[in-house]
Length: 285
Image (cartoon, rainbow, N blue to C red; front, side, top):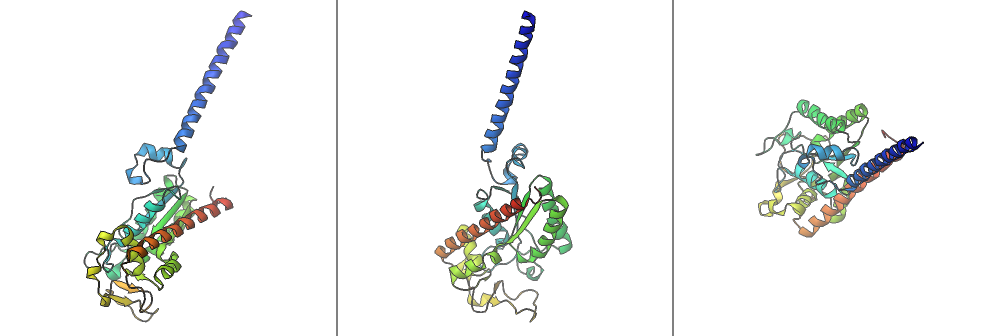
């Protein structure tokens, strides 16, 4: 009897120790899950921390896509710099990591200008798709493309569709300047343009030292051609107004800050709402 009681005591102690160990592991896991990442940028994370975060803690990634092309009197890299700054501003709000930016895009009509680089479509499209595919393979459930260049849109939409269906993930492609059309008109009281009031203000908000109003002249701007009216290669102007007589840069610091904040709020709102709708529908959960 005494021997039986001793065996039961040992078993009870072992079970208690096991439960305590499990509880400690659970508590440690909960503590790790609650701890914010050391950085939101994938390129700065070590592989161990990334593995701890994705997908157990973070399911969303922001992927900036841009180009290198002339933009009036603001940086040639505006199409990459803008979505990159946007990603950094909203990443915590949408609980996402930020993938490295793809800085080159499709800009054949502007490649004649100094500093421009255009990637052929047959090279760009599969590369862009491979980037999205690899992010999905790493465990991200929501892949959010922050596109900064209109010339990339068709290729990115096609890549998003293929990756979403093949990998059973959710992909959202955001063209911020179109999404913010009403914000542009509210802040500037007129329409915008490529390297116009909207893009110039957005960049001025976070890189004022690289905006050069002293280089600006009115004749640098041209209205976009009416649909089907004509097509010029290279483009005649690097500031292309959406409407004739509207959209010239203002270089107003107050407008720049207001525009940057309102655009980022709109993009963050869209991402959160889209993910919420995906979750409610049970899509690829």
